[in-house]
Length: 84
Image 1: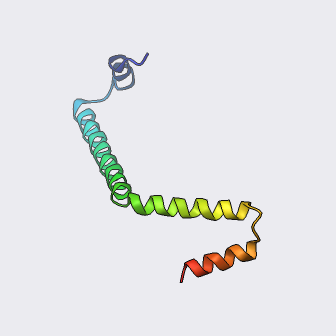
Image 2 (image 1 turned 60 degrees about the vertical axis):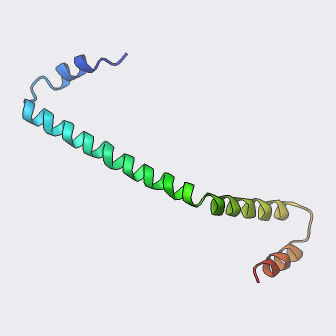
Image 3 (image 1 turned 135 degrees about the horizontal axis):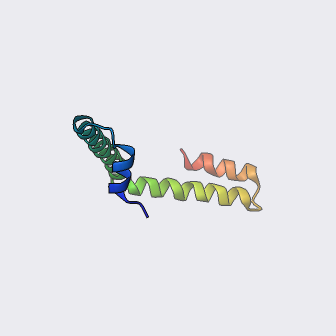
């Protein structure tokens, strides 16, 4: 099991407190910026969920039609008509 006190006393036994505190600041900053980027991606998906879902359903439909016994030329004609 990870023991943070043991880790810090072994790995950073020669690190002065100023350097150690500066490192803590860097770690906090990276965690904060990573969290903000993740939140932005989550917001993008949540705000556009209907569009993501519609795109997925369209791709699934295309895949299903290509895998069916329907003639590919007929499918492509149908697809072209639906895009008009």
